Image (tube, rainbow, N blue to C red):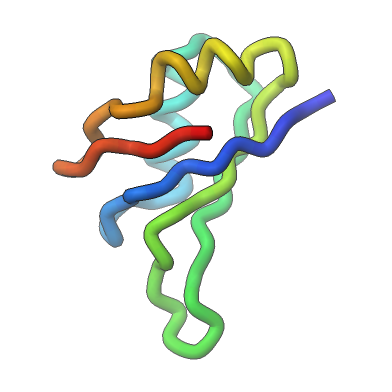
Length: 78
C-alpha cells in the first residue's frame, strides 16, 4: 500500500525526476513516484507535487523532508 504526500513550495525549475531522486536518496526507498502539478492553460508548474511513498515510510519521510531546502526553497511536506 502507498500514501500520497503533498510537497509544496517547489521552485519552478524542479523536475519530477529530480524530486523523486531526492526522496529516494534521502530516505533509501526505491519505489517513490513524483507528480508535479501544472496549470492546465499555461503548462507552468504550480509549485507543488504529490509523492507516492510506501505507507510504512510516510511518517519518517515527512519528518526528514519537511523544511529541506531544494533549489533555494524550503519544502513543505505533509
